[in-house]
Amino acid sequence: MTTMREINAMDKCVKALLGASKVAIFSHINPDGDTLGSSLALHRALVLLGKQADLYCENEVKEFYASMSGARLYNKPTLDCYDLCVACDCGDLGRLGACVDVFLSAPHSLNIDHHKTNDRFAKVNLIFSQASSTCEIMFDLLKLIDEKQRCIDDEVAKLLYTGIVTDSGGFTYSNVSAHTHVVASQLLKYDFDAAAVCEKYLKSISFNKFNLKVRVLQNARFFEDGTIGIIHFTQEDFALTNTSEEDTDGLINNIRNIDGVQVAVAITDTSVDNSFKVSIRTTDKVDASAIASTFGGGGHKNAAGCRLNGFYEDVKDKLLKACKDNL
Image (cartoon, rainbow, N blue to C red; front, side, top):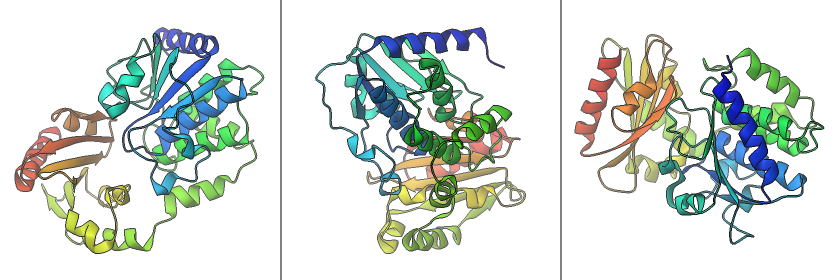
């Protein structure tokens, strides 16, 4: 149910976007389909309304998402100052990475997100934790910005649909609601190949990523009578399969989907010694964000993440204890 706080935040976002002429839009570090879809859709919508806008992200857009309309426009500013900065799908300022100074430079800021652990870091915070994705929220926002929906064309619709599909696991996660399907059905009225979007972002896998998947899954470890599953991506795995950290996306679901597993954890070696990226996926019986928050991370009930430092076995043991405590 939409609260009065959320309604007020939506109204403030509409006024801020309509009143701004120079806008900077930010995606989170290691961008995924939702932060890209919502940011790129907002950028294109504002341009269609005659406004000037730039896109920022600490990292380059992954090859997997490089074909998304407008992806090449990131970090190529056309303006030297902004009257409004907008963060899309960012749970905290840390998710902006090295772009945080630009975000803080504007007199007005918006934070549009669906993470329940969002710490409301902007002047106006539009947080719908019940939404499937930030793209779902963005569609509602763009409809309010322009009643004639001139700012939503085929490309904007495709971008929003891509974000919803990728962040909802193809409409399979628990935060998918009747409203999610209503938004998707309205987007499908536009002229783009929805089946191709699902094929590319939900099914397609490179041969190298397939080899990485086989290599890592055969070394999966299970604990607590098979209720907790852990996989580990090493730098050696990446080297031997000609892959990288970005190729780990989605592979954790192969553990989460096993009958009886309630918590799946993927621990990924980063390029920094003794530093690990951790992804957590759970059933509805376990809160993934509660596990991640133990280590300063966050996310959603069934999908969350954090970063830990230390030796692998120590990191694994700490995570295993947090998982057990939340079973």
